[in-house]
Length: 581
Image 1 (cartoon, rainbow, N blue to C red):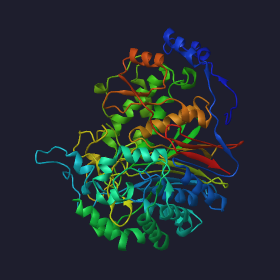
Image 2: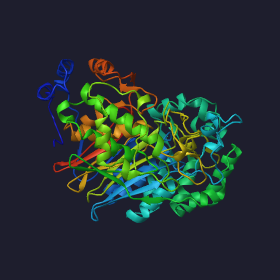
Image 3: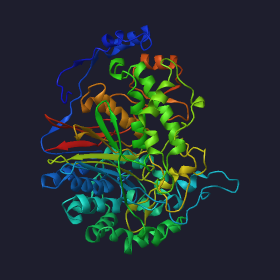
Image 4: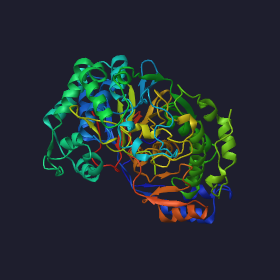
């Protein structure tokens, strides 16, 4: 496996293609392959001891500083998580939730920490329906009812106490300083605040923080101070999760949510629990894929799709050729159909995980795929087995000098969540309740269809696509990756894995390569605009309904090799950074 390349690399896809049977390769595909005869090398970041890859440079630097001080990967990951709440407010958070995979090298053990938000205890199946029984979008997106009980603070605390080596005060120090003293507004932050002003500024408590006193926008280079958030973080530094779920902060959170029409209570906050779960695991071409189990749908379906694709000679078909992308699309179509039927909170619904990731089931699905013809989604149903979720999630990856690794994805759901800051706290509140199925069979805000398994219920966790993933090689972490992107997270993460394992790309090349996405319904194959136009026409000729999109995802990935640690931040998002030492 190549970890690092310094020259232009000739990728002779045409030669391997002509050795395949005519069932796989047409003259058009052979012609298409010549387009890929050369590919410019993307150079990853190299480090010897440890590395942090995140979507915001200051947060990455905070994590690396912890590693330099002797902290382990978990210490650094918690520092990054709290720092992103200050520097990347549209997705970094303490008012949201997420998933963390922790690999402990000495024990050769991986733990899945589920700190996903929970529905308030009084939530019920019809909470977002009007008198006619139809979903009311505003109630689950820009309303007090949209807010799920946040899990981030307790998730970070559990990880730190059980698997870290530092104190909460140590790992929150950088975040508190940045919130108190201010951060320089980046082009990315300025653009996002300006673009989402209607939703954020409708709440006076939010407008006070994210816009100037005269109502004007922050410009690039301006100093953004968040003293109330600094105070909330200081309470966490002093008291741990009790400084968030009880006392002053909790009272202000509940008051803000109820004033906005919500039903969350102090007991809902006090009773929130983090759950440690067994990761979902599969094997792909000799590598072990370890990912997040339900209520994430990501791990199950990444493994399900890889199991399907393992039935085909992907490496010989070539990287991002129409032949390869066709097979990937057909596997995506089938996995997302299963997602709509079978995935939900495992504490409320028996999710058939082992059946979905069974190799024989994958062979059955693979046998249904026509090599040169798209299957209409109307003909694909959930298997007989024993618009999108917000792209404004964020992912980060960490590796330390001892071989421990953390893959963490967390979110507020929409960019800036509900847009509501709880007055006096500086804390942006999520709108994760929109991730439930407001009505079975009805798409949510981003086109995802769900059923009874993901219906609203008190104390239940909504289904998520977040997919923090660690790929193991010879029992040790090899690829640590994940992405924001809502429903596209699953497919984005899978493509990073395939780019490295099937196509022998280094981690930077794997990150930069054009991406595709299909989610069963709507029946559209979304492709990034950088995908070759001839390839797009070949896909259309196979019957795919192709829609050209802008960038999808923002992976933050690390690859551990015998030559050292290599990492890459996705160029699709401004402001991200991978650093090592």
